[in-house]
Image 1 (cartoon, rainbow over the protein chains, first blue to last red):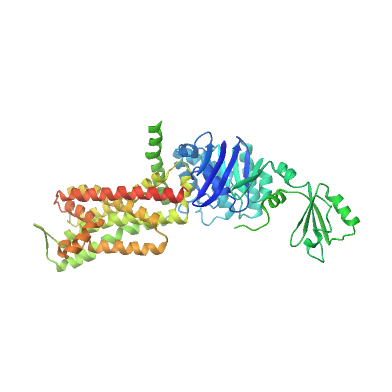
Image 2 (image 1 turned 90 degrees about the vertical axis):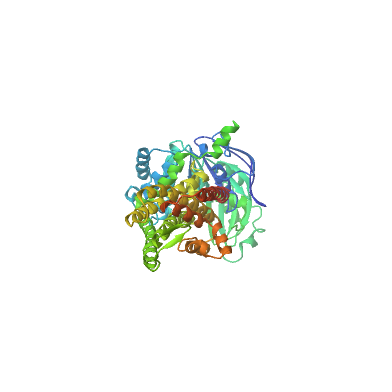
Length: 304
Length: 268
């Protein structure tokens, strides 16, 4: 579905995407993970054929996005990061009007709009304008709109950013059903749970480059340990324990409020801790998540 | 192969242009707010015709233009007709276009579909021309009813007002792609109002000093007024071909620039 080699996007002096390789297979749910400014959205815009690559090779659905932009876009569904629903049109009209951009006949557009509103549970809102809808409803409408041309490939740029937990779960559930129907999904996110829930395979981007690639499980196994122990000490700064705890677990990561201890066997690490006479005020043994991988790979510095 | 690529790039799809126009019809279907916007735009030129054309016209017995003598209302009415074509189209391609272009990102959503910037530009321009033509059609009916032109000349004048709408709509759209924020609109409206007052609308340009007359001769509304007045008063002249050429060039330039700017801003 997507093939990229050495893909580059430059804006003047700034290189947003710095030579990435991608292969996305049909039916796959593929994720771009990375902090803000990592180049995820720029990559998505190139895949969506609205932004011309500055260098490298890109094929979408086997076609060249520069030459065959309209033909490729006819088979894509795009759900942008910030909703750009049409505020002058009511909900139903938003879908039928959008269908017309794809050349879908009027009657068929109405049939699909009815069906899609059902799918995203917005049937009662059909004649409401867009503005009074909640964030979750708007996002669901955006997803419905992206489906109106029955696309082969759906691009979702941060599909659940800014939604409350209920709305997120509903969106995830709908996206999962699309995936079951065989639709190829490509999404960006900086939520680790979202990537773990939805993606078969993902890449971690940082500074315009791909820094890791694989299934969520594979990434956790490769870049983190099976378990993580979160330790809090009442008295001193966590960093002061780094030397004292040396040799326990595989890696120590002091945060301002707690110490992360990466270990294949969390319980064994805790036993060792107690044997050496340390008495942390709280101990939490948990499974390693993508978040750990993400923070290991992209660091803890805040990026804007 | 090369021709296929060129055709793909240059030719706009009529059905996609139609879909862009359809979006505005959809806005009319969605509720009353856009209807109010449309209807209100009709009245301004009509009110000017009544207040100045008829009202002030009472003080001016008749007016001689070249070798023709006409009533003041006959002189002002075609100018107001041209103005209603201009302001109808401009309202669409400035305010509405700018809002969709810059703030609500409507076009970003549209460009994610097979529709291309040129098709958006042409679709919005045609819609703006339709809007302007609704006003001029109504205005021509008023003119016929008041005996300010004949049915025959009104039928000829109607397509001329469409050209006026097209030309102003296109340039308005190009300007909208360059505008930074609402404050720039004040500048644009000042320019629009100056043209409205001095383009041979309320008094013949020959009455101004030569320098001023030349400046006016460069501005677009003058050409629109000359063209439309020549038709509604039934005094065709060769110079009107120049007016047509001016308006056609203006429209072409506007579309070209609007397409270029939209591609640059939205497709990076």
